[in-house]
Structures are given as C-alpha cells and as structure tokens.
Length: 233
Image (tube, rainbow, N blue to C red):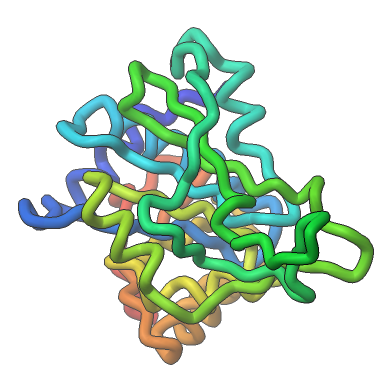
C-alpha cells in the first residue's frame, strides 16, 4: 500500500493548527474518478491519528463504494488490527438519509444512524466508518443531508474528522457536505489531462459555501514547487 507520510506531513503543516476548543472537519474530493482521493484521505487520517490527543475519524462518505475499512484491514502492519464494531453517531444524527426509509419487521422506521458503524485501529486512535449498504432493498438509496448536526456532534467527539467523498462526476454527496467542513482539499492526479476540472469544481464548491483550502497533487512524477498550493484560479 502507498505510504504518503512525508507528503501528508506537508499537507498537515499547510493547513495549520485546528482550534483547541473543538475538532475540525476536513473533506477530500476530486472532480473525476481515479484521482486517488481515498488514498490521500486515508494517509492523512493515519498521520492525524498518530499526532492526535483525541480520536480521529475517517468517514467513508462514498456510500455506494465503501472501500476504506477493507483496505485498512489489509494493511495491519501500518494501521494495526481492527477493533470491535461500534455505532458511528455520537448523538443519533446522520449525514444522509435512506429513501424510501427503512422499516423493521414490526413496521417501525429504522433510524438512518443505525446504518453507519465504525471500527477502530491504531490503538483506538483512528476510527473508520462503514455504511451498511447491504441492508438496502431494491429502489432504496442513500441521499446526502444538507445539515450540520452530525458534523457538529463529531467536532465535540473527535480531534479531526476526515471525510472521503466520491468524485463529483459520480456523486453529489461531496457538494452537499462541503459547506459543513472546516476545509475542503481538492485532489488531482499529477499529469491529469484536464487540470481545469479541478478549478471548475472549486468554483462549484465555493458557490455552495465551502472553504477550499487548496489543491493536492497525487502520484506526482515531478517535484512540484509546493505540495499544497492555494487554488486561486
């Protein structure tokens, strides 16, 4: 598995310190699929967890393609073994809702938060979420909620929350969730055919109220002038 410790340390320094009285939420997103967003988010989460005094959470918000937990389980040498399952919502809220809603055998609605679980690693310093897409029935889908309740609860519970969102060309989750993050980092694969796609996504994010922190070049073949540069257009 890719080790981006040096690069993530540079990103950490570029983002600056968080507030001492609350955790911060950092979202990673790309304009198109295949840019390596999940790799960057996972490596940043690992570095944040190693340095943190409180738990760090990696929220796998690509609900149609949950990969983070499985990949981390395969790299026990760097992440350690996974702990037991736990609920991933500290207050019963969720950043998504299932439509049409799920109901139990008794006909009562099943809370969306019950579908989001998490497992710890790195001595319980890092928690990785997993959405139970397996319980959805034909015609049901998860939709992003334009609300900040879940993220506000996580800020009280965790030191850093990293959101790994699907590429904008595949899902609107990233655009919906971005306004509730403290910083949004765009990921672009080095040598991408059309780097303007990232600038276009930045404009969309900022129009939605997001705070774009900068641009990360992933899988760079040449040394860029700086690892994280401001996205100024």
